Image (tube, rainbow, N blue to C red; front, side, top):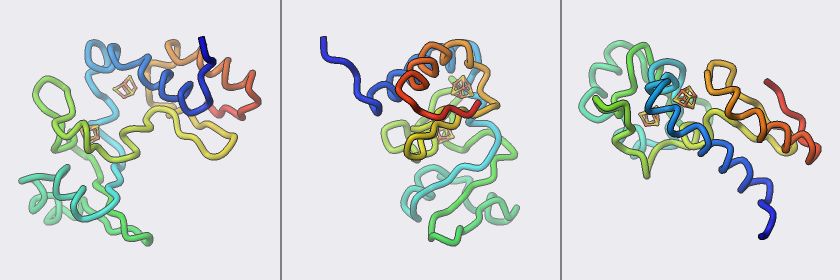
Length: 135
Ligand code: SF4
Ligand code: SF4
């Protein structure tokens, strides 16, 4: 069988926590923090009918690069009652990458993610491939 390339390994690692995300963690990362949307269209999709209220509460910020951040003081507007993302196929890049963010040959592990144990074998393999892994 062909060995996974680095991106495939990272995707496999992210996927390895998905059952835990819905069954145990219940999408903690969709409940707080800063959610970056690449453009107006993605912001409208994620914020939905909560956009006006978020703007009134000053919880939407335009960033220097033209992207938009939603500051999550409550669960993300796109999180449904079953702890699933209602815009999953079009979710922002930060959501796709969570909890492993790659910067060249470095990988940062989100410290707030409680699935660290599941990630451990993948982090070991990344280190073996000379990635700098920051936990
Ligand atoms: S914080 Fe980690 S375990 Fe929880 S939903 Fe997010 S990625 Fe999954
Ligand atoms: S867009 Fe989806 S994946 Fe991203 S924080 Fe909201 S509910 Fe979670």
